[in-house]
Length: 326
Image (cartoon, rainbow, N blue to C red):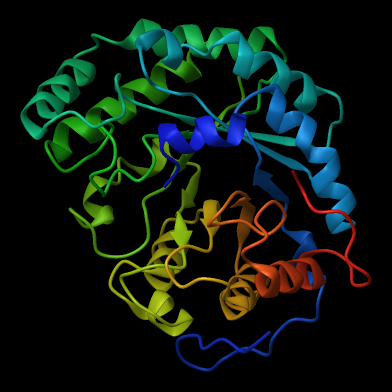
């Protein structure tokens, strides 16, 4: 649920209940097997912050997460200030993964009204915007970021963005299919496409937006400590929640992901960190990237000391607290 204002801002102990029989809580460090990262900034600022986050956590960050801003179609094609530093970071080591959120429409926020969105989705499904996505794919390939994970039209079941499904679900699915086909048509690419709704019942049930197994590689979910629901058990069991995601992913033989997750409405909640840790450790998760700025984060947000301690103990190392992020 990262807004344009949040991107600009970034640029300048308990138990959990799961559905059915609860698995034992994994030992601290077990979730390190899941590729880990954080959203630390959209451009060179985010890349530069990784070293500090790694030092604080005590483990290597292998997932870099960036967003295309989506203010114009030129943004969707991939500005140099985003693609250059992140592609260089990705290609510097073979074990790294680049995750890039890509809007489907421009402007993506503030969101356009439903009538306009429905019209633009139909135009997209008919091929009006193919060249923008072809250009993005070529720019990524030219920089060596050939295996980027594309989080396309994220949180499509909500109302925060123009790239949403509700105003015209059929056109949205057709448009997604067209974008993926266009980007996969660029020589040298090995992109994976991540379908990532926001958790819970929103404007439209997210399964109604699913475009098909042939054009989706990962079933993602943005999962913050917020309504609907209050406890972690609520987040698991609620309609279109974590268990629904896990069931859907298993039925479609896809791994899961968590491109955005973190604290939000319920403050410095270490229990939520435990819940997410256990969930990652007991499911087929391709990667997870926490949103690291206030109120969501654990390194750069001094408002969350208990959650920060829990995150570092579970996902990183124990010991005295080193310097926090700035």
